[in-house]
Image 1 (cartoon, rainbow, N blue to C red):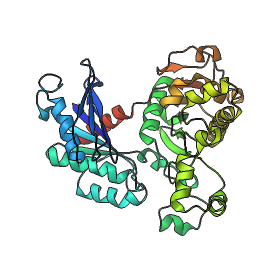
Image 2 (image 1 turned 90 degrees about the horizontal axis):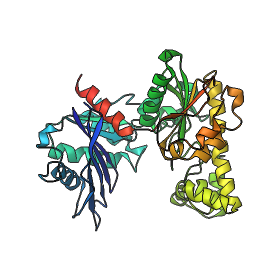
Image 3 (image 1 turned 30 degrees about the vertical axis):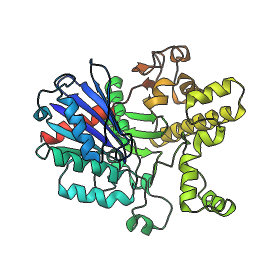
Length: 400
């Protein structure tokens, strides 16, 4: 089965064509600046180089059409006919409480995603654009929606309710939703395979560390708590997001800096995190370079980030009543040896016997175990593959 995976943003569209018979990516790429001057298709057919096409894309329908034309092109295409695409899987950011698993997209699903746009105003409308475009061009190809929030719908009340009047939840849908669910699901499933323990007995903490970061407690293959909350702003300080903080700081800043709602949202989402602390960059490679050059604010930013990840690991070990494995994934988790070392130092009490020497020389972005053979708690690096997870879920749903 061949599945086209779509991740549509407001002015961009990422895509991968995956052959699930072999789990191979046949082609992938990106449409940039949709509806803006200078729009461009980047097309990477496996084994055939990278191709770029600059052409006006008025909307997502134009973008999808360009992708499909490239996929069946006589010279650089990877398909003979468009009908070789068996299904389309769409990443949808917010499923609220309506969707606890992936679903076949029909009019009722589209209406529900529209309703939930209030919870993800920057993302759900863009995801819908990708759905509409595919429906226009490929009306007979089944489409599946895979939700970032779905994996976390197994959290118990005590994990997702905030200490607000209950009406904030019952009437306004304010609760912890969690994000990066597709990634946490993928790497926790793989960790269960590596542990070789009965699934229902496993206790795993997954650390998705990138420009956006989240930590999840997974018990018996199900999410029972996660660090991101009502929005992706909560949790550890991230590249440009502040993470969890005293809510009274919001009104204090608005008063002292004469900010409106848009101003405080930009302050917390785009100017904070390790960028705000360091004054250097949101890129951890830049921070480590600055720290090595003696920049104390860069050092502080890295310390704050790693301290907070460590704090979540400790708290989730408590709610899991122990831990069998800790998993690092995503750009920083898979590649930044120094950050991993800072996080794991001092966790021996949990039963972790880290091989720090191997951590400092292991291949980047590869699946590896970082603990010594006799370590009671295993620590893994497991590269995430959200697109493959979306493709597999899509195939499962359309085959039912």
